[in-house]
Structure formats: structure tokens, C-alpha cells
Amino acid sequence: LTGFIWQGADGAVRHSDGSTLPSATVELPDRSFLVYRQDADNVWIRDNSSGGGWGTTIGKVGDILHGGMGSKSDGGEWEWSQFGLLPVGAHDIELTLGKGDGGWGSAVMTDGTVAVVAELRGMKETGDVVRSLSYTDASGKRVVVRR
Image (tube, rainbow, N blue to C red; front, side):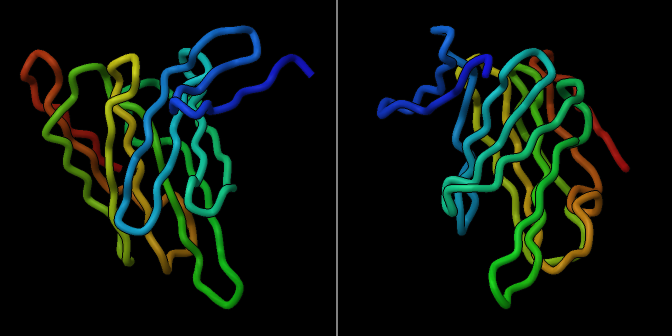
């Protein structure tokens, strides 16, 4: 064991080495997700509503959402999520989702990067959740990423 991570009563995510990790809670209509970054490229997500469902992604900030995880309740249908980070100052975010029932949300992390989580129900694979992503960066330039 090289260390552990926890979220304190104040909402901050901390590592056992004493550091505080960049984090945010992203609210969707029917659940919330804790997103935190352990290092420059390692992003983690936790489904706060069910108390489980950890996932990770390794990818550059600002690219189309990389990480994904799926869950299925007893007798229910699959729910797939994709998540990632946008650069500091990203705003006017727009996502085009694949076919299915779901939604997306974003939140500014404690270091200024923007966490985004998208979720769809009734799909077979996580890769079909986000079809395109666009946002305005801190300089005012519109950035568009498509699958």
C-alpha cells in the first residue's frame, strides 16, 4: 500500500501524503459524481449516489471525454458514464450525446480545471455516450471535438 485517498467533511479530497487533490462534485439530475485528479493525467470518478462505481481515465485535458464506467441495478438497464477534464477557464460547454436517456453536467475543480460527466441509459457500450464536445476556452476561442 503506497497511500490512500479520502474526502473529508469539508468536501476536500486528500491523500495520505498530506496533499489536497483537485476535485469537484458534478451534479446530474438523478445522481452526483465526485471527480478528482491524482496527478496530471490520472482522473478518478466516484458515484456519490450509490457509494460505489470508481473509474479512471488517462488522457490529455481538453480532449473528448476519455474515461467510462457502467453500472446496472437488479432488473434495470445499463447506465454508462463518460468523464474528463477541460482546461482552466473553459465555459459555454455543449455536449452532443448518443442515443439514449441521460444528461450531463460540469463543475469547476479546486484547481480551476472543469470536470465534465455525461451519462446515458439503455446503451450497450460507454464509447457511444459523448458524440461531440465544444466549449469556449479562456482566450475566447471556440473548441470543437467530434468522434
